[in-house]
Image (tube, rainbow, N blue to C red; front, side):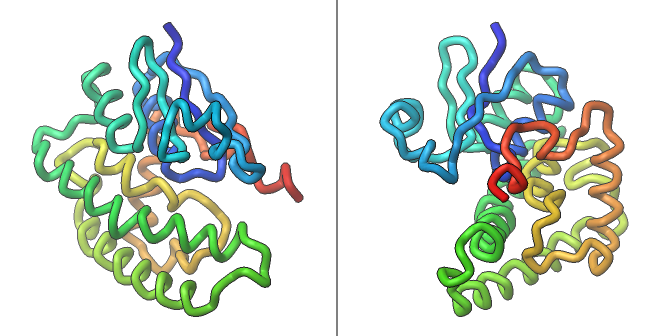
Length: 208
């Protein structure tokens, strides 16, 4: 049975799950959630996920939420993207949830998707500092290695790249982080890779 991923193109967390399924050949289809018009707050959606967040994966009799849980489900079902050093892979997934995507996502939202008169300068400044510090950590880790953990792409890579393929500005300049830049290029060369706006429905141009 084809799995359904409730998602929208602007969501880096949903992109992690969509990308993992695209790379592993998972049988899935996207279901668009109109986030910017309250789709995630509807009673119907909250019946799927009381947290009112994407992604949500409905796969057979299971309904899974939170990108890390969904990623582990995909890897366990397919036998792919699971690093030999599971603890190290999970370490970077948890790091990303707090220090990577957990800061990049809100910063990108504040800088691009809120009306300009609601973009809190102090919040943007604080998040920018934390985001740049985390990117520096990621740059150091990737210097001299091809993948986040071991010798092949894993869920750690899917997690940590989630927001870094988007073009909306949030202070991240790939040229300033050569190891991250090379790593993203390697991910983009994997068979099945697609940009988030090609892989999932929903694009800022739809609202322009």
